[in-house]
Length: 249
Image (cartoon, rainbow, N blue to C red; front, side, top):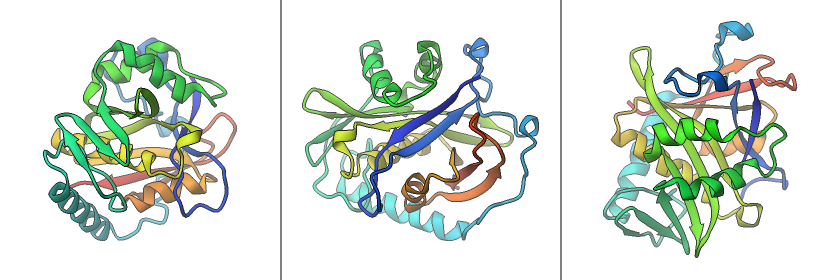
């Protein structure tokens, strides 16, 4: 079982230089070849099922739909999309370019080292390559890289499978090079992943982050996520987590 904290894109509105963190926890690498949900069993952690600050879900659905409509009209073909704050979008096949940074879908094993380099840089308990391969090889279309010229400067790794009666997307890993923050790269990676999930029939998207990680909370809430549950003592360091959810349907 590993506690992994992942570095992500900072927003221009943040007040400090702390790292945005997106968390994925408790991966049992002995089951890495199975398609079971890697999110820790809530019951095993004695987690409360009480909702936390659940905002107006309908409002967030309208926000997302508005974002999708606006961006799809800006970017043709619509293989990926950016945040409302980013203009001048140019797309070529599976490559989207915004402000000089290209967003590309995972293609082959040669990109694995770049993804691991970005995500492992500041981790105290990094994953083995088998964990990366579990996510990326099973859901390659939900893995995106941000590339500046020939350097990978950001990456997102996700999954999408059945959860009860819905198809649930899960943001597992998100990281941006420290020299490329405050350029909306993290937000654009998340939005690319969300659109890929929508195209594959996702009903919702979830993730967990530390309750103390205000920059990460602001990033995701600005993209329409709401606070769904508080997970007590979720991390190995004893810190509580908030599960954030985005309803797509």
